[in-house]
Length: 408
Figure 1: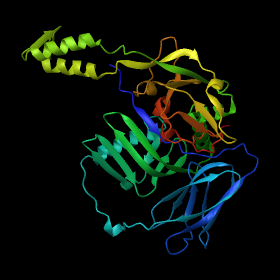
Figure 2: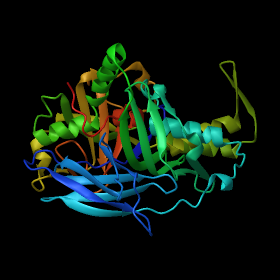
Figure 3: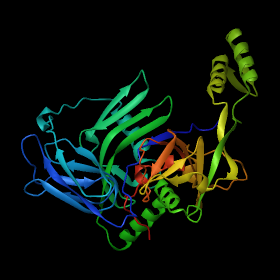
Figure 4: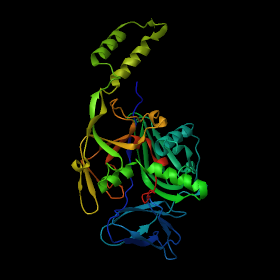
């Protein structure tokens, strides 16, 4: 029986459009309900760009192109704050009003939870990932994770009231991640998380710096960011991407309904007994469980249609800053310059395909709405527009590079 395929609804943080000739700025003031807040840290989500509010609480971030931005603000004694800003054809001025944190060190109550370690382990696997790069990541402040498990809905929910700090020793980044939401439903096997990451470079030189640079390049190539950048530029094929539709075929690991029904009726009607077959003892309860699992198994699975789709048939201009991806069903994106690793093939994310299809890295993207809009730098405007399966679901925060990353 195949491993269950995890499906992820990933939040893809928005960025800016980089083709316009003019650059603009975001200026503003950081304050609370009473006064301005000097020294507040202001970050650009998804980038390595940051600044600090001056003595009057004012800040400025320059050299920005038209597009969507998320500003993040951090100040001791206040809750983390985020604000979306859109730059079209002029600079933008904003006012960022923070709320005081109602929790002080003296008010913290630690409750023993025998399942907390298990839930944090699941969170690391589904948020940071299980790739070789993810294995070199460490959450430096796991105590800020607020964990809730709803037994009736089989849903694990995790939130934070502070920045989650993740140190990536593989790519050489320290992430300050404002986690808006994390949900894992063990019934549907769907994971959704959204948030705002800020990247800081880990100090390195010589061989260590070169190692970081090489790993970042490997992480970038074949990623969804790389794909959307090349799709916008019209050179997806030259960059190594091939697109195919996914078609549904009968599940080869599932028995026909008639056989499943026949065995269930027979076993439920018969008295409890023990069956010896080929020297193996099987009880009726074990057999019934097997056929019930067969009954629940999907009748059809997605498989690659060998006909390659031209990007021209799917992509069109939406406006001067955005392009539109329009298709129905599921789209398979193969990256032909890298092949699947053994670690990936054992991860449970593997995509079923015909035997004559090479073992390239394959990702499946399913639109959750009619269309998807994306920028030239590879960021997606519609944050909840896609479900990822396959390789892009396998690689998560542990393989993420900044939005302004430029490969060698």
